[in-house]
Image (cartoon, rainbow, N blue to C red; front, side, top):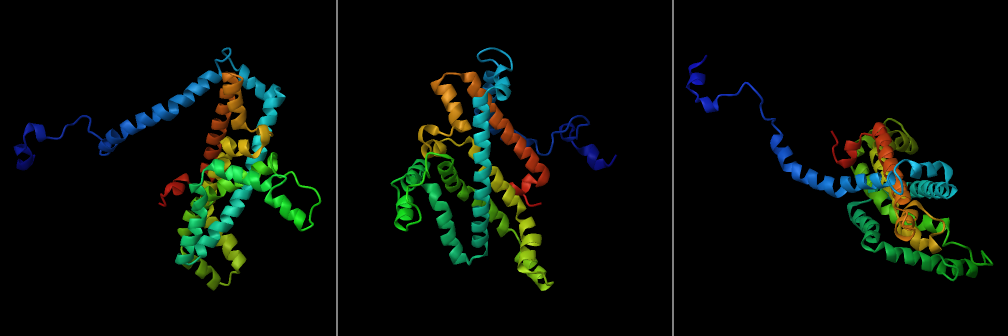
Amino acid sequence: MPPEAAALPAAAAPRAGWAMPRDAGWWALLLPAFLLMSVIYVAPILQVLAISVTEPTTGLGNYERLLTNAGVQRVIGTTLRICVVTTAIALLLGYALAYVVALATPRAQRWWLLGVLLPLWISVLVRAFAWVTLLRRQGLVNQGLQGLGIIDEPLALVWNEFGIVVGMVHYMVPYAVLPMLAAMREIDPRLLAAARGLGASRFTVFARVFLPLSAPGLVAAGCWSSSSRSASTSPRQSSAAARPLMAAEWIKLQILDLVRWGMGAMLATVVVVTILAMLAIFSRVVDLRRLFGDGH
């Protein structure tokens, strides 16, 4: 044994047993936040799950309604259909807008971003009522089409699925633009220039280089946009008496109006599980760590 080691006091000598992990200090700092998040988020979700299998009786009777109740199946079908259409349109418009912003000059980018972020500062209720005003039978859109001689009678553009899709797309496009724009800004312009220098056409550069590199942002935008299945305000204000009925409004109807807690909790659980399953599937396609800023 070296004389320096022998000179160390017994308290300073390394122990042969358990040693504290190097990152134990970070875990100690994160533990209160983890417990708080568990109480705020996890506990209510577990409570909803418990209600779905205990009200009005213990068992899976509420979940059996998914296979036997035509009303529940109609609500789920309507929600999925509107969610798919809304997500597809929001991704298409958002990708095109993000592409324009990413390739614009720095001065133009500031104005583009202002236009993207401005709707987020306006209440969703104000935006929903604005679309109702524009799309109703005596609204500006119908009056304009009649004035141009395109239509003879006002079109039913609101209080139906079309009105819901318009309102939801307007609500979701800014949330689709931001993650896609963040991914596009990480693409090295030299890669595009190198592909062009090797003789690739503009379409080939976009399809083989730009689009794959921006895929993480596209997946992130898809995750955001697909959350429209749980939105309630826009569908309720864009369709009179909430017809057609979507999942969020149906859950509210069951719990607050009909006092059928088990049925409402059942569909709420199905929505949460569906979103978690979708994230799990996306994680197998794209590394989700890149969606949260970890580019390693």
